[in-house]
Image (cartoon, each protein chain N blue to C red):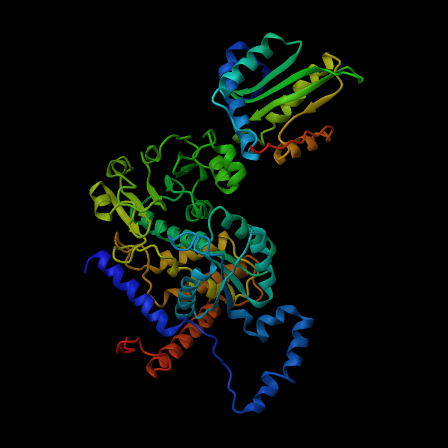
Length: 161
Length: 447
C-alpha cells in the first residue's frame, strides 16, 4: 500500500499545486451551470485568494489533503461576521475539491473533520457551504453530513435589448 | 472494380431493390388455415381460453404465443452507421437489414421498431411498454453516451434480455478474436497490455467484457480524441457529469498512469483495439513499431481501417483484424448476435450479462479449428457456428439462474439447430418456388 492520506494546513509553498485544484473546481462549476464561465485569469485569482487566506488565518481556514507529497484535495473556509444575528460568526466553505480518484477514499470527510476541530478551537458554531445549485454531487455530500438548505441565491442573465 | 465504383454499384442496387421489394421482411402465418372454421381456434371464440391462461400466468405467453422467438430491434436513429442522427424513418432500411440477418442466420423473428423519442427517459418508457410483446430487445444505432444509460437502465428494469449490439455484439466478437490471437502468440490474458483506442460504445463495452474475461483492468488503457484516459486528465470532472461510464473506466484502468497523446500508450502494448476515426493514418506505423513483440492490432473503423493491414504488418504487427470482409479476420457482429439471441430466446432468458457474453466469445473462439494468423475468427458462412453459440449462451443462462426454460447443452444445441435449419429450408424453398420474387433485371434466385 502507498503512503497514507494526510490532512494539514496549507503553506505558501502549496499555493501553486492547490491553485490547480481550485481551477478544476471552478471548471466543474461551469459544467453545472453556464453562468460560471471560467475566466483567463482564474488561475491567478486562485493563487491570490490562497495567498490572502494563508496570510490572514484569523479570517480563513485553508487545509489540504496529500499523499506522498502530492496534493489531492483542498478546503477553503472564510470566517464571516454575521450582521443582525447571533451567534455573530459563521464559517463558509467557499472552495472544496478532491481529485477524482480520491473521491471515495474518505479524504473529503478527513478535510471536513479537521476544519470542525479548527472551528471548535475558535468557538464558531455555524458552518455553511456555497456551491452551484445544479451541483447535485455537492448537495448529496453535504446532506449526508447533515447540512440543510439555509439561504438561496436566485438569478438570471439579462438579455441585451 | 475499384473500391469507389464497387461502393457506387452497391448503392445503386440498394436503392433499386428497395424500390422493387418495398421492405425486406414481413409477417407470415405459420399455422394451417384449412378453411375459415379454423379461425374458431386461432381466433375467437377459442383464443379467449388462451388469453385467460396467460392472464393467470404471464410467463406462459412465452409458450402460447410467438413471444419466445420475437425480438424488437429498437432504435431512435440517433447514430445510424457512420451517417449520424438521420432519424427513425431513415433508420428503417438498416433495421430491416438487421432483421433479415437475424432471421436467416438465427431463425429469430426480429421486428424493426424505429421510434421517435424526445429524451432518453422516453426511450426507456417506450421500451418498457413494449416488453410484453417480446422475448428480447436488440438496441441499435443509438448515440453514445445515451446508449449506456438506456442499456443499463433497461437491463436493470426488464425481465427480458436487452442487448445493444454496437456495444455488446462488437465487444463479444472482439474478445473472441483477441482470445485466439493471444493463443497464437502464446501470451496470457492476465499479462496482456491492451490499448483501446477510441472510447465510444464498442470499446467501453469491450473494456468491461475483457475485465470480466480475466484481463487486468490496470493493464487496459483507454484513449480518446483527447489522449490517454487517466484520473488526473483535465476533463475528468466534465466526464463524470456527461459520461460517467467513461469516467469510471478512467478511474479503474491504466495502473501505469500513462498520460498524453494516445501514441504514448503503444509502447510495449500487446494488443491494440481501435474503434476510432476511419483511416488510413489514424494509427501510424511508427506507433506500431513501439509495440511489444508479436503485436496484435484490431483496426475496426469502417469503411477504411485506422491503418491498412499490410502497413501494420510491415511495421511489425503479427496479427491484424479489421471490420472488413475483403481482408482476413473480419471482426463482424453478425457472428455474434444471431447465435446469442437464439440462445437467450431458447432459454427464455430474463436477462443477459457479461458472464454469458464471455461464454459466447469463448464458444466463437473455440469454433475456429485451423487457427492461424489469418483465421482468428469464423466467417459468416460457418453455419454450424450459430447453434453452437446459442447452446453455449443458453446453458450459461441456465447456470446463472436467468433462464425460464431449463435444458441440457445438447438439448439447447438440438433446439437451435432444428429451428435454424427449418427456417433456412423454408426460406430456400420459398426462393426456389419464387414465392420470394427474383431480383429485378432477370437475376435468378440461384445460390
